Length: 238
Ligand SMILES: [Zn+2]
View 1 (cartoon, rainbow, N blue to C red):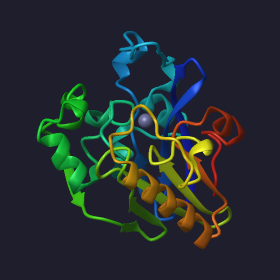
View 2 (view 1 turned 90 degrees about the vertical axis):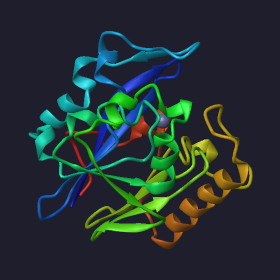
View 3 (view 1 turned 90 degrees about the horizontal axis):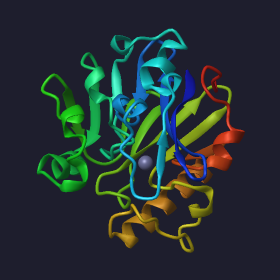
């Protein structure tokens, strides 16, 4: 099994990375985790107030996949951590995949919550097949999805057990930065929904899991300093 860290763009100031991830199983299943901002942002970024989004053509999810020899039709499963627009902007490109999302999150977004409306055309495309799950689920041997509500209801993180590296936890936006890794003292972030208890519980869940699994590392969701230190695609962790 291999884990590729896909760099899908930057938010300025601060060189804040927007990542996606590709997990390739030994028997050839390609599992993509998140799809980044909408590809239209390459030419027409929709900048939040005070922020500037930068996506070069080589940062699109299709370009990152092409660089390791894959096309969208090669992706069998898309794991959707949540439906914020930096995570689900290109779901509509993966019509041959099964999308796996927490039921609680999908139903909140589907009900018309305004936070998830901007990019609805991409994630609620009629060609997409969703599998709705509840709680922690082993997706395939060695890959477990972890419900980590708090940032948004029904957010999910991913545990990958790699043969050489060992366990790696993809926290996504449950823990965006290493400075937020301590459940008791961590700060909340401006984009966290109002669920301090859930945020602290999910942060604790991931740090305890990492300890129990003797994890090699946790990948934080948007941590520029950590990102620069990690092996990025086309390099990979095995
Ligand atoms: Zn995010």
